[in-house]
Length: 382
Image (cartoon, rainbow, N blue to C red):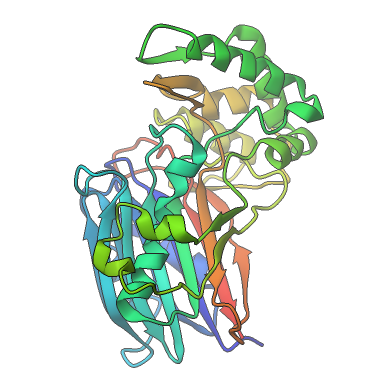
């Protein structure tokens, strides 16, 4: 039996919003069985309005602990009891030096009973070249939080990391579709064009769709080519990141959390991005699953799907299933990007474990499908 639970959710809304009934059903199903949950943390990216207060209140989480806003990023926190949780500090940061906008982090340091949590909602800049540069924001946010409030027991970072499928990671495993994808990406990389999107070659597209349709090959693809780093060090580089001011590191504080670890997804998980946003992805899943729900569908990682479903879900809008080039950055618009990282203070007696909820495909109130899966995790503390 755990002492308490914290539920975390993330959704890149792409300027759309879920319907009220869908919100309420999602919250009810997510909290089902979470009797010891004291806090619900929702990270929203590309958020242009709307709230979740009513949906959380219907499930007994009527106390809004607080909300941190940074550009289009929002972290909103709800508690079951007004006495269980309080915000000790909060701030917003940008992925670059140009001010808080679409990409960045929103951070709250929260006391949950006797545990001090650093909770970060993030949307990393996919146009940054290199995974290290892109993900460096997360260690910096935790280091900054530590410098501002002192001791932290656990850090929880949830959001859109924009670390898409990386064919070079899986090259040695001789997966044919990764070899083809790497060749397509190299062709675009050598192009003189600096800002463009191109479709995959017909051979690459067909092979990738076949790999994504079956559990075994999808699991193998994810195992070797998941672009999200398994660990992010919180070291001296974090203190010199642009989000940390001279005040943050001038006194030489050492962060007691030395690294952030990626919470692995279940084998065979479908990519969380980019889902076709023209409603074809949703309609295809309704037809394939047999579930008549017209607002929310679960993507079962064990599911074997048809190539036609995969094509409808991931390759039928102008940004889905393509390769993007922005300056020196080249990446595939496909991957397991909506993720959770965590870190525990060295020497702490706190133990935390995670259970991921089902990845959900959501139809927005506009009728269009959202292009990211709605992801949830339950963190159990002992």
